[in-house]
Length: 262
Image (cartoon, rainbow, N blue to C red; front, side, top):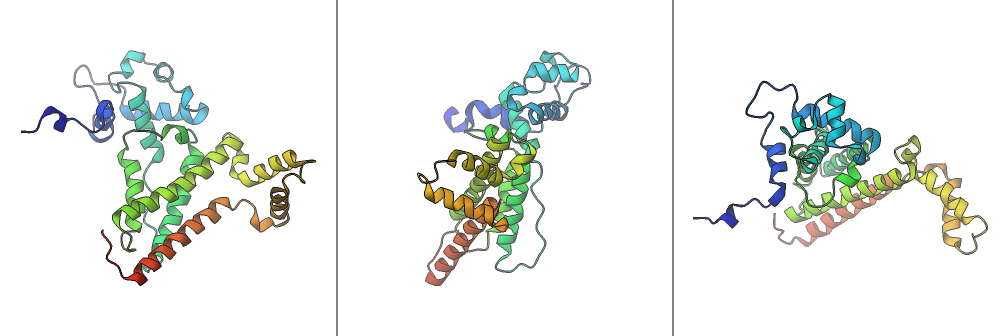
């Protein structure tokens, strides 16, 4: 007979988030038919975060927006930790659809390109996600669905199961890093869509009168500004090099003919 320790959820004090995200709890079990819902509360919180960042979200503020008492919200969600978990999953939304095309050896690249582009757009719509989706937490069905889509694209590439996960982590890390640069430069404004132009302008200002001290950076900035086609390609350039590296690794593993765990 399993002991209490064996029965305890690996999520510990975040077990409430598991119930809300995966258990389908929608309304309190007692009392009159509620006018609120988890979806309505979460959408209101999501709108507040999109407009003013995660710091703009509080149970009091949500209650005011919905014209309910704060205590009414606690009948649906225990606190902000669980609410943020719901917000993240709602913000992520459904993963991108399967990319149509021939099931050839390079299809995984097509799928991962589309996946990375869609993830970039999620971060552009909800920049607060960059700070919220970190640390130990519970992944919801939408977010796990994104991982499923990317891992499935690598299922027939010869990569082991662990390598498939690692590859997805590398790609998502690249997307996240570029999103963080964009957010820090533009703070959610239109200029954040062109981070390299913002960076070039900032570097030019810092290098004024100091180019002899940082000659390599000065030369690289000047070359980038002279070549229009080279601007704002950090995301695509980095992604393609990651995919090139994965493809080369797959090729080496295949040519070696070694057994690989799956």
